[in-house]
Amino acid sequence: MRRAFFYVLVGVAALMAIAQPARAGKPERRGKQVWSGLLVATNAARPRPAPAEMRRLDPTLRRTFGYNQFELIGVSRKALQNGEVNWLASSKHFSLRVDPRGVSSDGYRVNLQLFQDRQVLLETNATLSKSSPLVIRGPQIGAGQLLLLLVVQ
Amino acid sequence: MFMKTFEEKWTAWVDDELSDAERAEFEASLDDRAAAAAEKHRAHKLGALLKEELQPRAMGNEEFFHLQLRNRIAAETGQPATRSAPQLRESWWTIRRLLWAGTSSLALFAVCTFFAMRHEQAPDQSQYLTQILNARVDPGVSPYATVSIFQTKQDRVTVLWVDGLKALPSEYASK
Image (cartoon, rainbow over all chains, first blue to last red; front, side, top):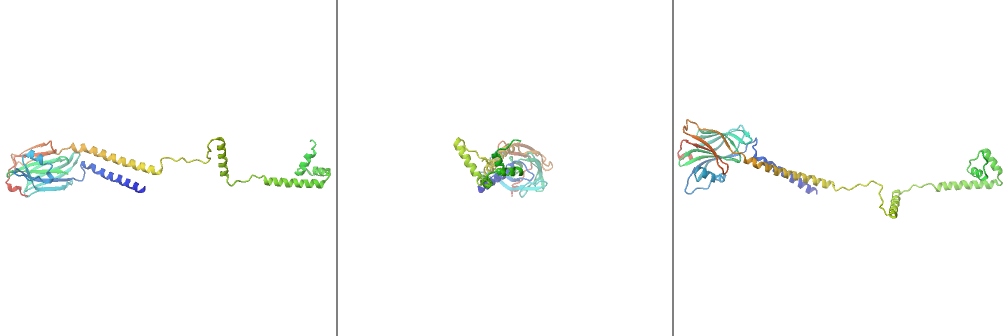
């Protein structure tokens, strides 16, 4: 009897512990993981499969940008911290600088700067939402196109 | 005052209730004083014996006796015997059942809260899209660059489309 009572209590505690992550959809003070990737989109006769992290978005990227192959040249997964400047995905010539500007009810406000070597190529202020990836179309590189992909996880 | 009969005087004499004068007068009237004294002594002895024997005795098993009595009355009258002691009624809500009921209610509440919170979260997550508040390209570096923003229906992707940036050689594609 006491053992059964103990199990029931443990079960209730476990349920409450599970219920906590249900709030995960809301932005929190502590930053969430942001996956960022620098991609070079090209057209290839035999396109290689997209990297695992962006396989879900592969059809949308193909349709939107008109390329059939996406190669990651820089990738990062980092937790955004308020008041801390973060360097996310970077390659030999490109890098992404993120300055978190706080949390609002609809997402994470950030200031993004895309650097080409030491030069700011593009600057934007955005509100990132977990359910909505951000893709930035960068300069043309050879026969391909530089894309920048940000996903709040 | 009326005159007492002999029987009354005799009874009073035996009970020592006569005054000294009355007792002397009564004893003088007796034919056989020794027999009367013996009779008085026997009466006193009998009284003492009766007093001793007729004392109510304390019962050691009073409750049992009452129970027997009630049972007999009940058997004769055909009604169930009522107990004189207060009877404790047994309730369905025992301590164990109360504990179980409390725990079950708590568990049910936790489960309902869990599902309610999940249900509430679903539209919350889907209603927000990534928004571009502003975008700027350095005109000194890319004077003809233009920026446009749109969202795809599938996957809810927000696209910041920059046109007119300076094209770069393929070496820039290196990791």
